[in-house]
Image (cartoon, rainbow, N blue to C red):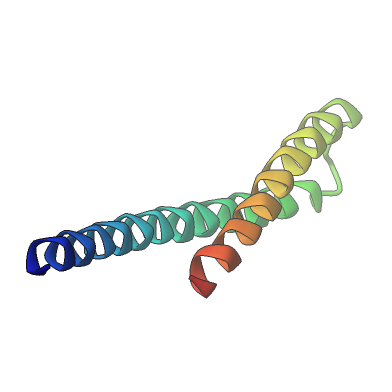
Length: 81
């Protein structure tokens, strides 16, 4: 039946659009996180940094890295679909 075929195609098209949109969001966030991590690395390399600041920046670094790891996994899944 043509209607069923058309509905199935429309569902596929909609799903592909959602996947593409999510992939773009994930890629954008990955770039943001990579930039944040680079900035934190630069700050952590400062020889005059205090231990308190090292601790704070280190915690931020771990948080960003954890999120990046999850998004990289999701990116891989989305990219293979």
